[in-house]
Length: 514
Image (cartoon, rainbow, N blue to C red; front, side, top):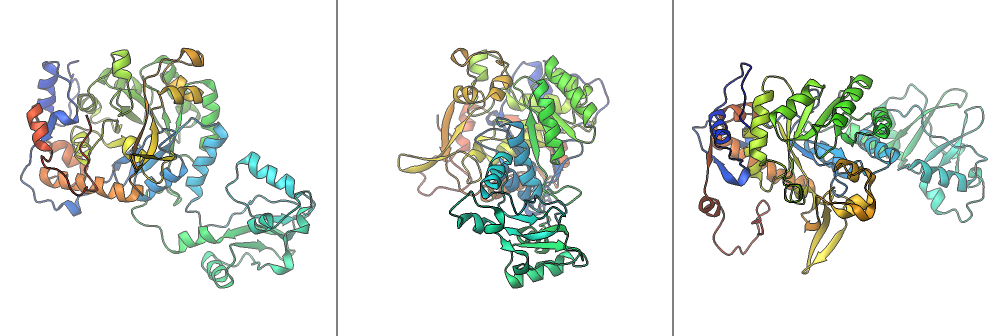
């Protein structure tokens, strides 16, 4: 498709290159090009990596983790936000489970008084409390015990559960009694409460009034995070909580799912479909924006300018670009449809330039240099799946292959994902298909174990900073304006890689296997 330029837009150096490629009907991906070096006064370490994920959701680094069941749950989302990016919680969960994952991220840095803690009564059975923890999917096991008048009677903790040999007894038989607890009045601030808890080695500090009625509780781990200070690199919202996104589908049930996610404080909703330019996506997008105008909604996936513009007109706050570039995606092979990723990013970036709608380049990233190329072509951030799937924070299990550790990784269009999840079937427009009649558009596999994602992100961002230095770009906006591309031959691709037997692995390089 030829790139159209109906509106007056800022001219970027790469426009001519991609326009010529489009004129010749050539689709390019990251390995097909190199960025030319330019005069530079930029020290890589000083490059500014701040950008946007959507209209109102910022990023300190241009990275987000993909909403896949072997990539992003709360651990990955927390790590991503602490690194400066954002994680998108996958939707192959029940709405309550997904909302709970979002809540875990939002509460991670909480350092305020919990004014409405979950309480239990003295006469409640231990068994009923354990059942409540399981049904509500609570991640904590400490509860204030209050009587019918709301007065503090004691505290039930994880230790009390552990040493209880008979779950049929009442809570008051195993709880720590009120007289054995340290409590504070409402004039005690966070810093003083923290000092008291640290000195007495107490994890829970109840606050009561003069009548011994419970006003709330302080949790030591929460206060510690706040008192020790929030790193400036953290991607936090206006209330100082880590930013997190969540995926939704296009069914009526997903509108109810979105309601729970918004209640838990999700910062952005991502409509998660393989083909974003459909009536169902547009209908869902309009409904979500009408119901929750305060929450950004990212839509996709698309790969042409016309599709992206259609979603923007429907109210999208961000566009997810990429159809078939993922390492475990077989959409292009099975359906014959899709588009080379770099060309898709460049065309859509040109079409949306000046609209204030960020672009997420989703898929195809194998090296840090690919991130530089994606941003240079106009993307505002990149979404990563396989590279993060091998880290400690991903939910995939570790397996041993050839004596080395790997982590299980599968596409959301794989047969296993489709069999396990209605959400995966919906994403690939096979909602009504029976399990024996599914047509997969992805595979299941494994990726090498990499360790903590923070260390891996450090290497990725180091490569990005280096690339910005070579282009003389002090920030991502300048990189987008200055980037100069050149198409390379297969020989040049091979020349780009080391041609020796590697005796010691580098943390940021592993030659792609054929």
